[in-house]
Length: 326
Image (cartoon, rainbow, N blue to C red; front, top):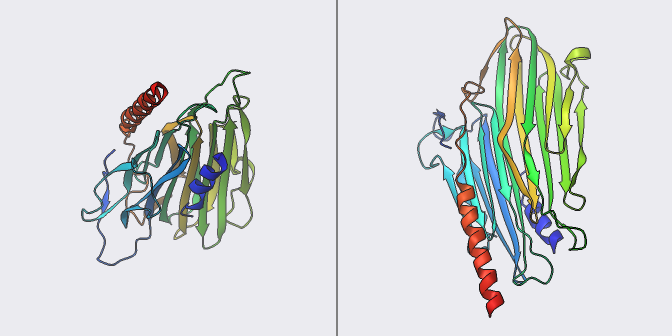
């Protein structure tokens, strides 16, 4: 049954308060975008349920028609019906004993992800297995003035907890996985980084992260000290730094993609925080299509999702107790 949840969560993958608004001509297609996606999946009482929602900075909020969880709900900020296009989005979801929170901002370069899931031991009535899948996508276009080196970085630090079922009490199915990708595309070549971490509750320990870098093309990460370098790698975090040489007038498309699975009793907290950074050599500056790329260092308030999730968990526990009395 667990495979059904994972398949449902991944099959539909698409690829706080908003403080920054960029005005656009009516009908214009933006050169930048922020998108949040959440899929909450549950196997409850023998039935399969799911809730799927996407919040895009240019098109607003869309609930997937295949959502069939009657308890699935979501909140978001800012209101996409307002005028303008927002570069700071927040989305919270709550399903049947599963929920998540995510936030992304082009202005701060920060990403925030957190999720909780549930699993009941075999034989417990009613049975319940839940999974939360989330993605963040941010993109922008940078135009540089002046020639020199620029250093892009990304830092991720979080925590994951599992069911921790004692030996002899049964198999611990809780698991977690996360990927982060940063790609840069310019007129003279490409550069990218990819990182992935996984862990599971079977041994209550992480399976080391896997990652690759691309140094091909004239725009690839510089060799030597400027090469793409990872440090502090664990299944729940890492540091990356890569240096490029740009020339005046260089235009770079930048895209950040982050995805996380939190499954079957795992609790995954990455709300403080993912951080994209950019260091410029003296004499080098840039403008962005969004007009806000890395212009702020605002912090994101603690999410209220966990209050809702706690209420959902309490309701489920009460349901279990009532079922046992019958």
